[in-house]
Length: 127
Image (spheres, one colour):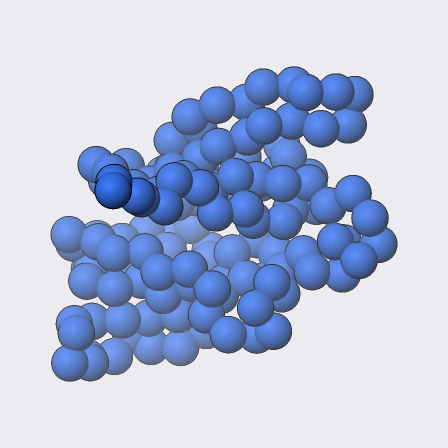
């Protein structure tokens, strides 16, 4: 068997603001933006690293989905972004005005900090 995780759905409030934030603030690449209907699009973004899992930006359509925007994991860190240059990416987070929630700190597995995306989802930056 050959399995791999391709996409993770991230519930967002608005496609365009989410695309802009991930591509402009974090430097992700917009892989696809296909209109499926008047209200639904297939939007994929990914980090620049080779073989990276892609985020499927899924616009919240119901009240229950809207309640999950920014809190898909009940306040726990949701996504983990590994970097080949922690200092560069830490400086970029600061320059972009991204909220750093904790850290940086030195752990057994490397340097780590927790930051919040535009909706408040928590991410680890690990280097």
